[in-house]
Image (cartoon, rainbow, N blue to C red; front, side, top):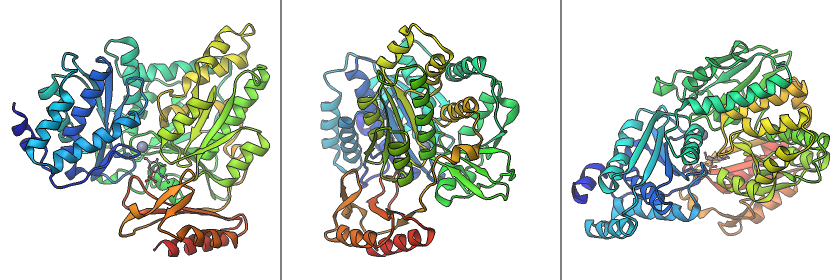
Length: 523
Ligand code: NG1
Ligand code: ZN
């Protein structure tokens, strides 16, 4: 089919500006057909440049409302699209949406020439959104018509499954069944459980009425722990329920129980987001008071546990371990890591790709979590060589080894993170409240302010300080200086049309005060 008629048919969104942001392209699903067509081209080119290795494409809008959707491209090793290609994606999408046909033809011709002898390979998946199949058809149109790409369509997947399966396809060089994902993590769980019997409270998993629901059900049919684990908010075929009053984002932001929970002081709860790449935990005390165990609590739990094992195995001077956070990490968690655990902590910009790179580049065991529950633990080649070749294969060493398998090595994964947290709690014999006791979060508040132009808000110092609008940072500094243990920063959201205001302080009232002062300064 000629390019002209393909564009006519598949790029109906015109006169629009797209940006490949922290989480790929994300928008109202009605406006994404052009972007999907462009992404088909970009993903195929990436695969061609990498000599036909499989490139992943995930269609999802994560924690956004059900009317939104989005797309992100995944490297053959399961990591996120390299940054230098993000601008190619943005440029092509905007060209398809805005320029005259002649310019598009020239650009597409220029981009697609040269590598044409290599047949690209794409691995695609989508979350449960109703717009998914149509958007996929726009991507398939450019990938097949312009490239004759080999496409493996897994249908419904969680985002981390797509990352994992893309990497497995590259490693094996053959088709990988979805079951390989479950087998990998269940295998690691069983290896740990064989060393130490599992002792845990009952666990309730809120799946945000997204794709995590059916995938958790699939896991439970094969998991030894299934009898003690129940799934709620798993209606992924009712679009209006997606991320509505439930899920990781709701629980983290509103700091309360999601819909559908039967309150029980003895249970441990967790919530996934819409594409199951984030998880937060929580529990109720005897008075049914709500206690959140968020990404900061998860990363500190892993840091505590791994540090202890490294010491027991006498590897603490051989293998380095560090934690990567963003500015949204609670100040108490940073202090606890540095002062109590003596663990190095680095801060990066928001968006897991920034944390991921920092973790991989700096540590043998790089623990990274955003406060919202998105993250994982990365283990280096040196780690694997060291534990494999170690003369003394103690149970502690084996646990380290199996933990490195239980935690998804491509990207943050709600299912894998949940299993890893449960394994650690079981081995430590820690109840949820015991876990929570390690440090107390400073009172904090995250709010959204809608402004006329969020691009006016630019930052420096890992997004902790504003460069523009001129003078605003000085006023924030003045407000913060008046509050005990006060900290506040402002940045434009990369996924929503708003500016985010974070504030923390020693007390609830000072935190509210600081949050409202800074909010007013922004407005
Ligand atoms: P933005 O909208 O740029 O703040 C949000 C989250 C990020 C990350 C991305 C991608 C907060 C404060 N921000 O980014 O941490 O998860 O979405 O989904 O939670
Ligand atoms: Zn997500």
